[in-house]
Length: 272
Image (cartoon, rainbow, N blue to C red):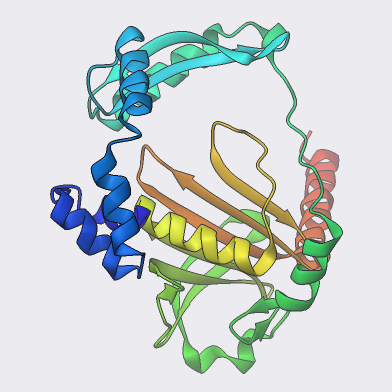
């Protein structure tokens, strides 16, 4: 229902709502009884009043601020951005904010390890993606791949798309699926999407398969899974209205870190 409301924001009359309820096979008589009773209007009006008291008279609106270490549940508002604004407005606001936040307010965010039940799901069900296992040699799949670009990270990760790949996962329509090969071995899969509806569909499917991810920051739509074989990050950036699901091999990621450290060590020994 949530997705249908977002997809049809200009068609929200009672008849439209009943149709959407029917689409998802809801109990129509009970739905219409609840809708017509207006029993939730008091709660809705209270929330509207709270918004008006806070100076909100329209959407979108964004309050920019930060939390202090001794008051983690209180946000100190620095600026309010009203209406749909270009990226430059947000960038300038955040740049100014980061330059003025007192260092004493900085807090380290720690990611809680994924529960053992979810680790098992990741271990058994996510040793790669769509039949391709981590470490798969590029030479064995080259005929099905289309070169896209080279990411300079870790000395170079070549990114490919797959011929005739299905750009759908559950109810989410994807923008692209990029397969990353490091030293000619499959190391990552980067799934990109646009729109909040696609984010919620992909999030629901990912939670269903792998369990609830850890959310390091309650103000951000970012979720992390730390499995024994596979790591995953799901993130939606509301300002840009797009996001990604990154899946990667933990073993190869550790190899990449060691290679980076060795490169930095050699640079330190020869560059100064």
